[in-house]
Length: 238
Image (cartoon, rainbow, N blue to C red):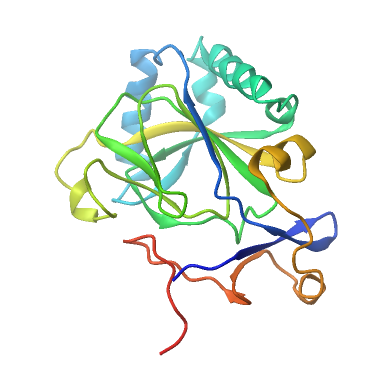
């Protein structure tokens, strides 16, 4: 089931509505590999502290990583230069950044928590046979070191095994090196240049927005439901 999506998001003290973009901006940047001792730290954290199950996405400690990562600034600068070339002149410098790890990712959207943002992700791990899949946009992006993407938080996405048509937890129970580590920035969706690049239209449901008190993602007038294995929208009819 497909239909027009509406994101209801916090804009200051009020809920505002907008369209959900199916645009995915992507490239592969030349970024240096993280040092071996840092990747060893990440592997230990993932195995012992996070205990990632297939499909999990969790945060790693960025402040500690920066102390052992001499090329961190080069990675950030590479993303900043890329966004500048896209006409997004200030979004990275002003955005919050986090360090994340995933062992695959089930199909999901982040519109109920981050409707006021787009995500910019820079993947730091080597190619491990995984793709970032956007089923609505019809995009599959091989994940390798330097893969960078910007996308609407309301757009469904997943990290799946290359060659597969959906997410299957069994695909991540055989190998121990199937995790991906990435930096992620929350970019303000109301930034004029970003909204233009993603073709976002604001105030698409002005009568519904004042009635809500939380961020939500709607499809055809009701909260949207997504299948975590296939990425398909689910019908609410019996």
